[in-house]
Length: 138
Image (cartoon, rainbow, N blue to C red; front, side):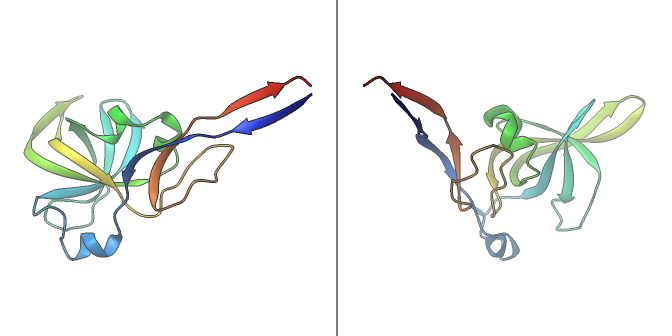
């Protein structure tokens, strides 16, 4: 009897290079750069705002974004995301006025970081690692 580990990969999306962000080659859209943050009332921390300024403020992001589309292992791995803005509006939480970004898409910046046991997928593509163990009796 033997066991083999089978790891089928499902490609989620390609990542983008930081040089593409610096040259603003991102679909000609306005964007922000963020990291996911597990905080009450907010879901992302700004790294760079829509004007290209560095920031560390917390914000709320709604619309299709990594929090809604990725598994927890990718979120906690401290990846950096480019989120494409369609609207920016004030967001009131706990007596403070913050910012809510409504987005219509996102990309992940190279390199992809993972917080998984089997970290063997390439850093230039975001893939889901579905791990199963098969046993065969002889």
